[in-house]
Image (cartoon, rainbow, N blue to C red):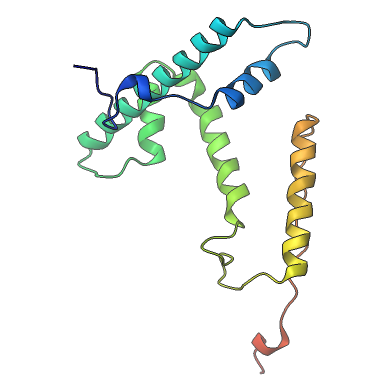
Length: 159
């Protein structure tokens, strides 16, 4: 019988996208360094195992608190328990940045405030996102802020 991980799939079935992982590996190394395919596969396997380890410990932390949903705090606590406490601050900062970046995203076809995007707004948002992606690709840490939304006069209160 094959070993089963915490999500009920055989460990051999769990993997990460090779193209994405290869890109990440290459971005972290100097341009003149090459990585053998078997080394890339080993690194991907290590990443999968690390995710399984943190997920499992996060589930344990969650269970000890009698919760049914693993929250970010459970993952941070799991990192501490597993001896990765030195990374907690960076992980938390990345989580906060992720929250900020996804706060204004479209959810279920609507903005978080419930208003639908016009074609012009969607195009402007797309251009902003392209600019952010180009900045990240070029190693620039700046974030392009979208212009403030226009106020619709029909929503203004009359006093």
